[in-house]
Image (cartoon, rainbow, N blue to C red; front, side, top):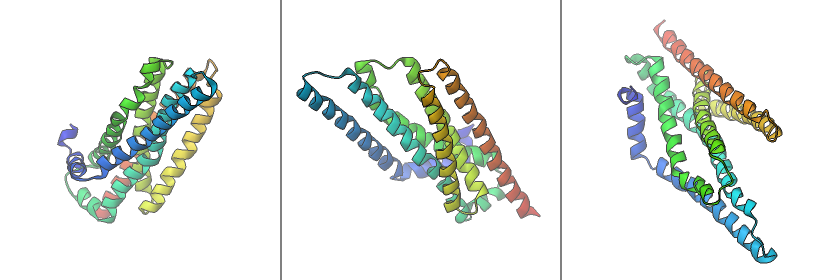
Length: 238
């Protein structure tokens, strides 16, 4: 149970006492609010000039908010996870953890679920903006479910990638560079492939394959992170 995991408990206590999460939520929603208001202003200005309201413009609000939130995820998730593990290693807290009764699995999954709770809270805070699409319609529940599923799987993958990179790299700088490089390259290829198949009948199959690929890569990254911790622990006991 994650409630009994001391890593999970410690990170939650530190998060409750820190201003990072409130500031992150405030900043993210402020940016999304600016995008939301700017798009409404553009629609109303265009209506005054042309005498007609473009219905497609309202759908752009959803696309802007969804794309903006996903961009925040790509920028935040690797950095949060890498900094979390690397900070403990540089402060020699990781060595102390390895000397306790905790095994590498508990440490890895404690960190993973800690970061997932942060990213999940960020997503929940933006639901009012994403819910505006129901006012105008035009986006089916099917695509909304695909978006949330993709966001959830991406949270797991990017957090797992940060764990793997922080385990393989010698310091937090290299780990962050590796995590950003791999994530932007992979998602660039995925988005390019999905965009090229957007109006193709194979789009849904490509999307499902992308989710499966991210899930398998998440397992690989978690395995790498766990093996790295085991190697460090065994090395200290030699």
